[in-house]
Length: 91
Image 1: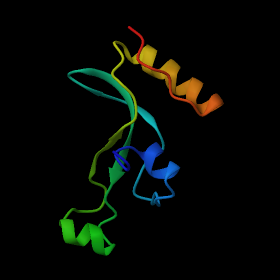
Image 2: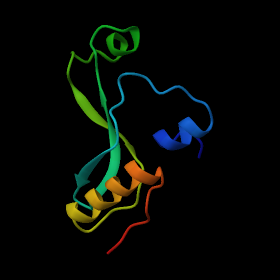
Image 3: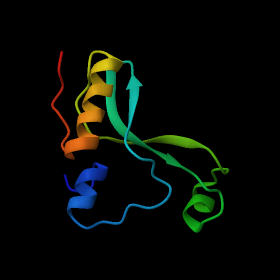
């Protein structure tokens, strides 16, 4: 679905704001992935509406499948920084 990831939103011309981090390696119980974090500023209307204080961060997007190790995810992130393409999961 359009807009589910930061990359798909950019591809369709949707605005990405200052609340969203650069891509980084993140993790859950399922494994490691490349994604973004949303950090509340505590001052804009959207943040006030959510009632979240400044500096609170939550996961924002998952751009890849899960990787088995953080090293594999880090390697995929480095490739992305050079090529602009995200690799499929590697186990």
